[in-house]
Length: 213
Image 1 (tube, helix red, strand yellow):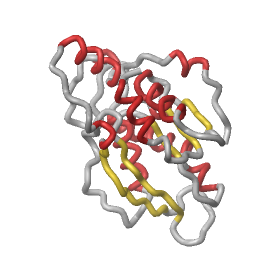
Image 2: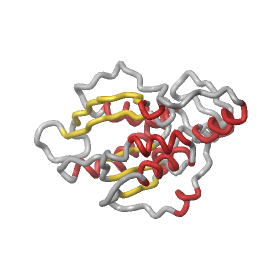
Image 3: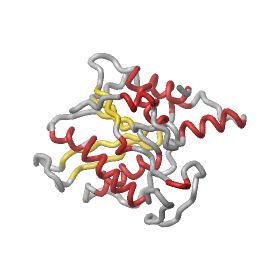
Image 4: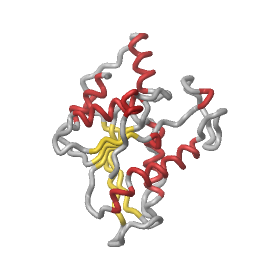
């Protein structure tokens, strides 16, 4: 497991989560396990879901393509708008159930940069008073962003009810302050492959039983 994942696990060791959701792709899954492994009893549920996978680039996977339109995509791939639709499904699967419980829950979504930015954007769209002119792209590997989500007013949750969404922290990487960026080719290549999310499913994720909330 890369040191960055270990570092973020140590960083959140004293932060109590009720549930941890992780992508089934290698990088985020290992990072999620690192965070879960440093939690204390009662342990949070650890739920693996493909809904928070990174954007799939199809035939262009692994070559870091540049697309300029949200509807553009390579053969067998997802466009950014496809990813946005999946982000909304992820919210329904991972966040909405906690709103229905009617009490504060602290959850972690351990995902990938583009997917995280689309989840944040989708949450903000559910808040009619939120700012829509801020981009949350360009997130660092294992950096964290904190968002609070609640129902506006005293209403119980129902589909379409407006939410109060506040982005309180963005791209925080204090746990990486002791790391230096290396120019060593082999190390850089290995790290880039691991953190790129590139479609490799973690062995642990394949055998993970999904926990129900």
